[in-house]
Length: 435
Image (cartoon, rainbow, N blue to C red; front, side, top):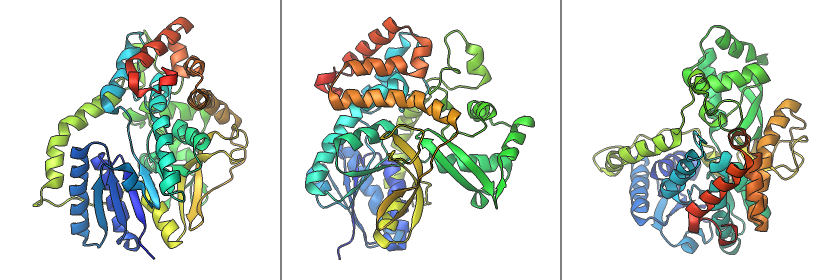
């Protein structure tokens, strides 16, 4: 039996590829895998290959790691396709998503999941993923497509309507937030049991326990004692009002709702410590740091720190290859999984994984106020996906009209004008029938 073939799509994301390769090759069961790195940027691809070979050498494993700019060659016979692309990149993609709305007074923090920025990112990304999935149907029809690309929910929802390929979306917000909360309340992360359900970036801890003891009172104590971390003020405020803690960071969550970022309300920005333009800052820092980081990663005299990340990808691959079960949080179509969210939308829930693949846990009904809040985001996702699938351009405007943050800041004429400006600015990155 041949070793599993794992294809990295968008492998020029070297740091992320490094984490995933380290995770995979650290498992004794997966040390003879065939990893193929694919990217359209040959320079970054070669950097990732050098890093991969260094990890292989340090771990002294027999895995094969190759790189190619030929997508068909990369996908041919792949058992797993891990997708980490960013269509249009930071420049021009992200820059346009931030700078054009600013002309209308619409400010954002991350703009990769919802909001006008998330809508545009989906319009650029879903068609490319769908095109890639056609290659998978031809070259590796039984593959598992593991998607890390944002906007997660819209990407996965779009693919569920446009492709026959099995897809699961993965995000690290569930374990990351659990670890943050563990630190806040002084309980070891390893001792905590939790149940999370919802949509990506707006899922909630329905249970947060240790040995059957509810730990939510300890989280409330953090607020009562004034120990809320500066970077987490939005989420703690939502916890105070909803009674459940949300999985995604405060800077993300602030732009999914209409309450925290408002023109002329700098008091809100200061009170909740909201980092406007946070994603462009991170990108600029990463670009500035990359030259040094790249040299260090490829320098043969320096070792690469290899520590297991919180990413679920390697656990899925190991479980499906060996049959040893794992539990991960995955983004999957809502096939009666959460009963009070729309059928077919993309939900984030615990999934059991083994040789049978991804098996989502049926949750039932979640608290009605949480479902209602999620629905405000699902409306935007649904209309954006509808625009992409049907080619009906008017649904892009409808998605923007119903977006909580955009509609709280702009009137209808402004929303339509902004949408026109963004579609024009993105040009060839948007499918021709939607420009």
